Length: 185
Image (spheres, rainbow, N blue to C red):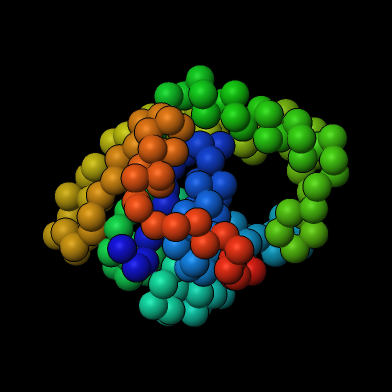
């Protein structure tokens, strides 16, 4: 396990899981959101995004989190392991609510200085609506994509609860290398 892609519904905990796994293994952590979002919540041009992802996943050891289909071919073809955080929708929505509330309260700066706003969560672009729709879609799309011959090389880890995820990381038998943690890409 040298190159790990972590996927799941928005709010499932991909970034936290990937950061924990990367720290544990002493690998680089690649957060696709950081490569995708420009200032002002502007999406990077597809070619720019793909170039950034290509560069970020060029290394020998990394853990990458994100479910962007526009770079799936790059990330999944380079990964040797795919971890799918497939948690129940009520849990995902509860985590998303808690994370959003914390970010709003703290006015937390995200990628390129972006901050979440209450107004965007009550718009048609609401992350909650996106997560609700994405959850069902992922349960169909991931198995179909993983069945493609071009991704046959991937070792698949399908985790259905946070407890399962914690046990899986603990069972790796790898010492905690978080003290050697490198800054995220």
